[in-house]
Length: 192
Length: 222
Image (cartoon, rainbow over all chains, first blue to last red; front, top):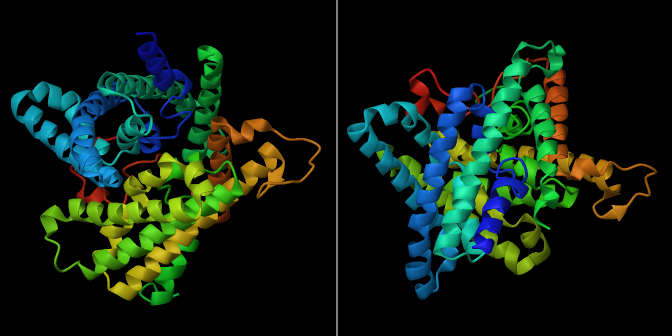
């Protein structure tokens, strides 16, 4: 139980997906303009990360390892995640249209998101068991969402402020991300 | 310069269409592995190798791959070369392999590679696609090397691991925050230099597969 808590806090705060490990920078910079879309994207990422961990664990443990082809994991995981995301999109578009409206539009963005592939590869690299993988994915997704929401609030302030012309747009966004990232350094000593 | 020539296909990736500094693609590896100049070069060359090989193969197969399932096909081709690179580095440069870690596998989802496959290799001949891949890859390597050198010199007072005995170092530059900061400054300088306004956002505007992305057609995205 204590170990699970450590895994959760590590992947959520001290090893934050976006601000410390640098995975999923594109959605982090792209979808953080508005608070609502930040929340939608965050929830979609949590969902896909947890499901991807649930799907990839049995494939890795019961198919790739017994056959001795662990090196195929990148190919297998990418195809699995892409298929899964496509399937979920089709299902919720048909069955739960309101959910599709709020979350579904972010799903295609996630297919080639390195954070999702990253978390499944991390699970196998750290040789987590099934429960630990899910907790790790949950922490990673929550960390992504927290970073995205904090950053969306920061950005809404930059939009209205007067910054030098050369730094308008992406440069100022990146420097703001640097400052948010500094705040996450405060968590480094949390688990010692 | 003639925009259709083979030379332009090679040169554009180095300068006017530099993938990470002008088109803002592949930001994750640009930020993550550039704590040392040698890491930057290693990551850049690994990506160049994958880009070159995948561009050649995809260009050769462009008439065979059916349009509707082209993205999964591209991904399989790209990932094959990523796995190959992973093996080669593990065997010959294990130190670099362990420093790059998970980001070697993540070359597979680097949008530069899928972007070039979709925007260039699937529409052009083999020679041109190879030159395009090489140019884009070397442009990416140059950007990573610049980032890595700056961060290593300022952050740990060394260059390629050799101590420079600087009187003052700022450890923040090798930390994650320094990565965002350095990239922000470099992009500002690059756009000042090419006399263009920096793009307002990263994402759909810069994404090469935007024209085919269902998500982008709806208008309100990202």
